[in-house]
Image (tube, rainbow, N blue to C red; front, top):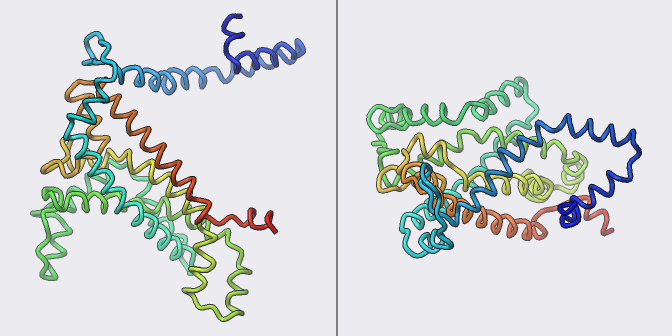
Length: 320
């Protein structure tokens, strides 16, 4: 009862539960029993590790020994002494700046093609969605072979037209563009969501624009993009969260150390290095929480900016 009286959420649940009839209480207990496997898994494998990592971020722990309290030392060292931290942040932000706009542009362009009323368009949609369902490790391994500087297919094709291709994944200048190309291979997944957004735009808007003499470009910028802006907003938020957690393509293509001169040292790779290679789990936990805070700040900024560029037909109708 002490816990019940101290925690408002539990106290409220207990008051509601106490007010139920005996029959409804039996039904409630049966319901809790049925969902208990999910609840146990949620607490043990999701909530528990989150709380543990937050506590570990204030400790030194080499995985096998006893953790020792370090206070804010991990956070202070990250911001004052760790040069690889700055490198990982630079690589990840550079990747995000180039990849996110390209993903949005390619996704919308692909969705516009998918939205055409042509024979066999269903096969075309399936072909472009297929790479999205292929495991990232398999995709990255295929691209490692395609981008091989000596016998890769990409450089072989470039050689046919007289272009000497770069040493993609072994060049500090080309490793980041290579990883952007690898990641864009799965743009079919976002294109399907853009396609759903396109098909929800009422055709009457285009018919009215045609009557007014608008051409295709005017219809695209005046109707399609504004009506698609909620979908773009949704994709940008999800893409932003995903891009800062890029790990698999970089790990497979660039290696755990981030490739030549650490030019592909993504933030998640660096967390992996500090946690499992250097065996500094407390330090890695502090890095993870800094990333969490950064993603939250950027996401809130995007949410706040949405009022200026996201168009909601329901809001406009409510203000009439």
